[in-house]
Length: 356
Length: 283
Image (cartoon, rainbow over all chains, first blue to last red; front, side, top):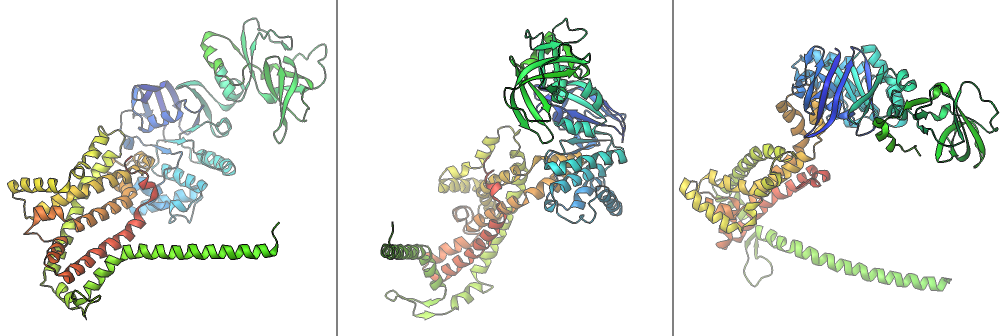
């Protein structure tokens, strides 16, 4: 295993550039999640790393080797495919041992490596099964074992959990993470599920429209998003533009003279049915008065849509509330993500579903 | 409201209409069977006939005399059978050598003039057979290919390539490109990948196309007649000569021999032709 260094990478199909100046370093033994909406270029980035999409500019270093111009088979960066791409005409052992067979390793060596990997991914005794006879979770593990068999410099995983059903997904998620810690492989995992990224990755890179918007630890990304897109994508889907010109809103921030974009999560909006007291708590950054529009049961709580003027704000609450109940929302200062408005961000705001 | 008496009457009526349609079905099935198997029955009777004269509905003498004649190692039939099989096998080989690489290349979307190349292999079928083969025969005279085995194999291959190319393209198109990527990703070069991953995936379709070519070659008459005769005698040519001479027994037995591989291979094709591959035909 070695570190991966991507420098000023540009890649795309034909004349259409999908990746725009990507810079990213994955340290040895680190797992980075590429997180982004569909079509943001995260799978293209993996394909560029593996040599399936031509690199038009920039360089990729696996360890100290520059690999961007090498053919796919010389890169030693292996991939776990979204569809697993296991070969149906081979057994489990043949699938896993394929890479070693290509390298002309000795039969005994292949067998010992295959049985070692089968025990790592907990599939002992299945070596002579056809892969078509396996369940989704088992296929996933065969794909992982196959990619690890040749001891790659870097392992990349392309939405490895998206084809599994919800329950299996949770267990495989932890297994992959545990394996990654145990074996210490350098890896990049692509996902569109923010929870998956938070749980599995050491660091997260948020991608949007072919650019990396922010790189950081899961805590940094979650608590301190550096721009509106990241805040919104990480679940802070309540958005208001300040000033709102509406008496129902009152903001208590130190620097709210400039126009602001404010984001916060529904779980941070504390809802109360009492009318607002004359003086609010010092820590409360934002107070909103409104009426209940809709209440949806979410299992452990209710998500309540609160209508206030032209905005609809989502808030979590432990009780069901009838429609049109007057309520007050309080959001603590440290749960508010405020961004100074400028021209650059105007584009993002147009795309917001939650805005208005 | 339906009273019991009414109900019984209704049932009776139902049974009568059921019976009527049942007998109608029987008649249709019988007619269809007669149309399908009548000629074959006639053929089967001829194979076990020793003498059969005009006014009689059935042969006057039954026997296997002609079978012995046909399967005599020195007869024309066993010689022609061998020639037919040899030509068919070699035609399959030639067609596969061309259509495996061509089918793989044409299955890739990035191939320039893809549709043009595929249509090119249909062109020999677009013209009347006779004109095409007569011109081929004229051309082959200049190269000394007339009446030779290679000449006949080339003619059969031109005909067989139409099937083998189109079916091969379908077979290669229905393989998952991700399987190829996975192989390259694990360090295998393009050739290793082709032989270990792509070819086994496409094999069922390629086997089906082999069988089509084999059967087409075995049944081919016009091309062999113009290019091969009189030196090359295949079973269809023998059949033609036998029926022209009024030797219906030999002709019928030859036809029966030609029927065996067809039926055998239809069963195999049924096993290998996957529906998802048929849906890729011509895509």
